[in-house]
Length: 474
Ligand SMILES: [Zn+2]
Image (cartoon, rainbow, N blue to C red):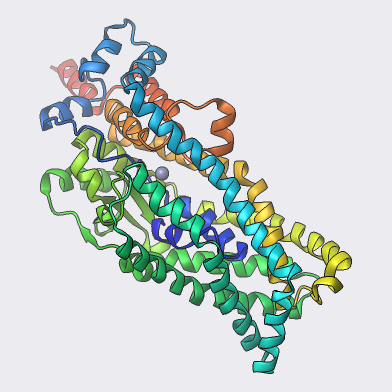
């Protein structure tokens, strides 16, 4: 769901209504394992992959070798050896990038809240509503006449922060590959899609508000779930191709081992793809997107260029975990619960605010489009407060995918190396509280520890049993 994420999260601008659905769905398809081109490409051959695939690979390479010398294999010590292999300056850079992201969550919220307050107290919102009522008598068209200028204005007012956050800052950390023109072109494309999707959503929501002024929070939740589900369903077919090209994997050295894992897990082969993410970013990533029949597992070209086969297998097995464990539908269900709670609280808070300031702001009630900034203010506040809980829900599914991934790929060292590459962009070793609040994926430390625990358990592979039983019968 990278693209939907790109559309909606970036500008942090769009009304919380749209954002609530898209932002939280973004991790459903879960951007995986980002890293930077700068990270040294480690070249390994297929034979080392085969050894690693056996599950217990002694002396895999330099840093792991030290860990393997510890006898018996100590997963805690091995984890520390992996973490210590990252140069200090690289770690400081990634910590700075990731910790800066904590503040951006705050600034995005503060800006969104300030815009809402400005539109209400200046009575711009009321004037826009009056304008829409002069244009037409048809209620649905009035909502559209309000929504389009509103969405454009919010985009414009958030543009500077958006520009810093998603263009300059990404370049500053060496994560972006686009010059301004293509970046801005994609921004406009995203804005156009948001105008269409956002307006459609608001027209339907306000129809609900008019018909059910007391129980809108229940029916509104249903609308949001249908909208989000549809978005996820159509994204791989109609939205993602607008930004990137997806094509089936061609290199048999990569394709065949991946397809073997897919076959072993009943994943239809036609759903494993390669995407040209290097158009936008240097990050190594893979993702699952879509729902039901449109679900698709894709790895990006940075991953293909920068990672060895064991690492690629580790990442792809993780993504297959999302597919097999049906995480899209599960996250959508969880999202529905969050929206229901959010809308229930919004129903109460909105009425309280209207009683107190409604006359001053010129907002008549929930079915009045002039109240949209108030609704956006309430929902973005709730979304901000819910950050740790949303992250935790997503992080738990990511951990499930990790567990599936390590058991399918049997690449503990590959998984550890990818976790380190991801560490170029995500803080490797946070405090538990930090991880709880800010991490929508397990930290590098947690992932490497899982891999090393798996390695220490030294599970038998099928072949050894087969040969034992064969020799027993002889
Ligand atoms: Zn994932």
